[in-house]
Image: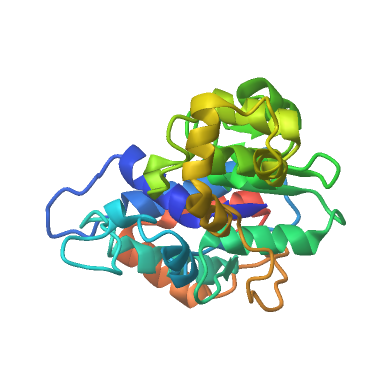
Length: 304
């Protein structure tokens, strides 16, 4: 089980009530929510391995070089590097890191890469040798879905972790009219994604993009048909695809997750004991996390 950590703790921040009695108390709703999500996921799905995948770089230089508008709308005012993050979430992220360390849950990032790339790399390294569940609220990771390799996405955007959509190739076909994860990535490239600052091809929406990918097999097939003058590509559609040639050269670098991020050796086996009881005790006392820690340990089968 691979967690898109930022996706989950942002969801926890907005979804879990702030129970502070005074403004002087530290905020903890994202921490509590994130830990409770882990407890629920482990209890429900019983993974043998668990990795919290991390954004060491939320806006990597190689993606910005390809598409300069990539995530620009998420930049903090006056910054070209810092993400605009809610004030009360900022101090909770280090606490989440410490909580994962105390529990002994693997936390993996790679310098110059996003959590998506870590997830893509670990999925690639699994190589079908074990099934993989990717937990995220981000549709970008639908590109990893692969029934033959046992890779599916638990999509939390609508039902949270308790009622996540289980995204398989059948789900992709029914929802987006694309047959595979790779086809979803090609469709998303054509469609674009305003939430990531990707313009897409003007006038090509989701349904048209899916139709083109189904007809020509993949994005390369669409572009090959365009270059060869396929008569089915005509009029405004041809004009728009031709005008987007530079975008279509660059966009796959942005849309497709890396499969070769430098993640190092990752074990990820579910811990059988608390890794750092002293740190856990301090966090429980300082931030009122005893209940959340107990729920995670119970899910892991660790005696309190």
